[in-house]
Length: 145
Image 1 (tube, rainbow, N blue to C red):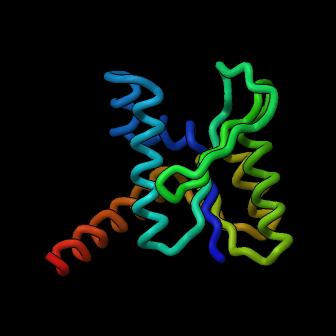
Image 2: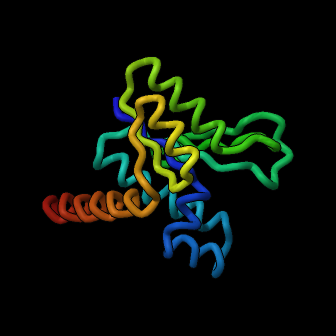
């Protein structure tokens, strides 16, 4: 199984459309749009996609996880970073033989994941892959209309 783990806020700040949405609307709107786009990517790529967000402004005492449009969405508990959660998920997936790809532009995170044997793509590379997946989904939909 291919597992794609996304550093949510890192990607939001790196994708111009999401960064603009965050400024014009809300952070929640940017998160929702990212999840929507990752859902299409996951369906087309056949990948298990997880997006991790820091819970900066949350009083949650434990991690919060839910499935939204086929994407696992994880908010870390207060005081814990997305980086640590991503490392934990990547390590667990590597132990069961999953193919791991982490999407982040954080250099330290990239080195750590590579050390575990995982692949790393930058936020702009993830955006290119998502755009390609959206185009493929459009082609599929038009084919059946």
